[in-house]
Length: 242
Image (cartoon, rainbow, N blue to C red; front, side, top):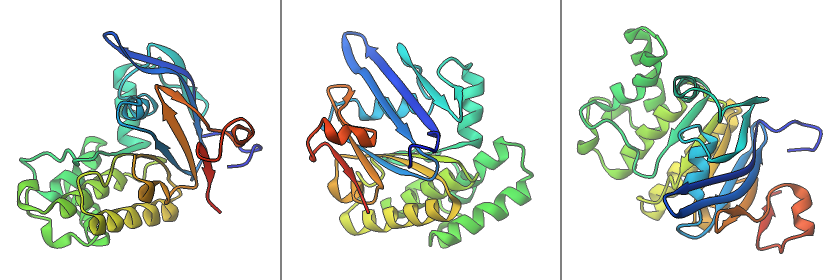
């Protein structure tokens, strides 16, 4: 991301508490169009809360989140839900597939919710399942698939609508190293091909290595974000891949 290109997402001064627990304490971060950003930090540092605020899943207690120039933290729940159906794709650590639905129906669901016809939604879902090597599991339910297969189905569901931003929360945390590498390779290749930006939440250095840029979240505060931050923080706290 260059300084002449406006960020796709900009979060400023985010604060979020759950009871007496302060998850975010003034976190600020930005994401460029087509950029893959890794947010790293220890367990309990606020990584997932930051992702939830950026994706409009929760609203911060204070601070702002702008997407494509529009503040989304003040939007209605219905409008934020619509954004997650159209512009945002979300991949969780354990997939969160609907257990009663087949792989095909899980992937087709975002399209159906957006008003697509069932036949067209199933055709598109089938294409994505084939792309990720799990077309043979199309009729299986989540409980009948391996962890790696289920996570590929979840990735297909996250990308099927052609989102501008994919939010991936510990996408390989429940997978073995080989399967995790396959999932990350598929995610990055698909994002590059479609031009989607990606926010990776991870504590795994092998996962963050896939990113263009890395920021560190410590005690609810982003310790390094924009290029100028390298002047103020150690190299352990900010990294840009060539």
